[in-house]
Length: 476
Image (cartoon, rainbow, N blue to C red; front, side, top):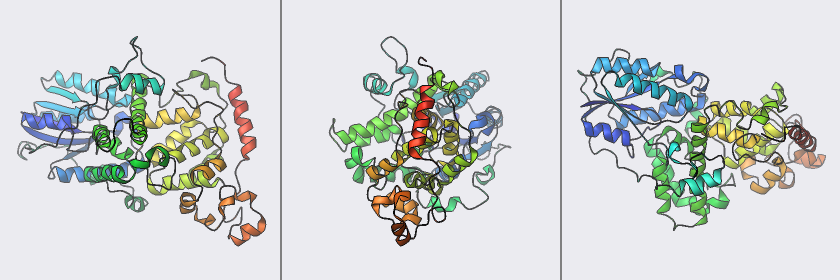
């Protein structure tokens, strides 16, 4: 049987149930489709495009150059490929963004009418969203019961599968597809070379993903519970882009981590819980299709956001005058990544201190992050804004000064990304405006010139935020 293997967010050979099914059926036609038409406003961002290009290149090498590339409406392209190749079967790994689910359902129904077998497989999540419910059959809206009572009480995640021992590809004679393109013709790389620097931060592809997991398990997970809050330490896995593009599966990480520790270890529990949060984000988007756009808590529809483009731009560029915030935003732009603790700090600063709509944060992160995942990004921004499921309480406003002092007390992370403050003593590193003039001069810092003055007053902005939150309706 000739089977089309449609790679999407599963750019790997190991633990890929769809690929194994296709290989076991006979010869395969491996394809990738860049479908920005159906994605609409949620088409892939600039940083993610760079990652995708490099990950597809590595996958193509692993497939001995047999991966075929296409761009356009997936439905139209798949019909064309089936017509050109006389393929008898189509397989893929499920995705959970609402636009993909709607498109895939339509594709499945239409192609089956052609007499072609279509099968989709679970390979991106530990638990399928529709299988995790409360005892009364309704779905969860709070993370802890979702994870503890729902997921951990359900059937254990599937054990990882090995890569195919051998892959047989349909011959070139059989596979003459007129709309096929090259990887370069997908134009995923920017015309300017801004991406060259952050590629040095990453070893993209399945092999790099496995190396990243191994490194984390050897050096990071043993201090994960506490160390994951310290941005200068290598205690986080940095696996999020790997999971998003499917260079490695959450199943591989779930079971590999459990080989390191005995059940009940606090570091292991913390890491597995973070995998659970990723599951929860996809679960929410599965049940609430408008999570990326609309407040999950509708009372926030009347919230008094402020639209100040110059303030937003200062936040985006990392020139707010608050060093830990600026460090995070500069790390993001330079590497396509930001430490999770710092994501919470900069997120709180944007939506609470600056009162900018969470949509602005969602959009900037989606364009700049290499791990930009629609489900996780949307759920996380709604959480920090207070309008989502299991949201941060409105009175929880991260203070960027105390957060910097607590989680980057030695200043290693902040000085790396805000080098103009490198000589400022720790006492004033996170509040340079409080430093005496002679200390600023000795440190080579001139506020307003070499480093900006704060764009807002923390106390005033906190009071303003609390007042705005107090005006919300008391009931949902």
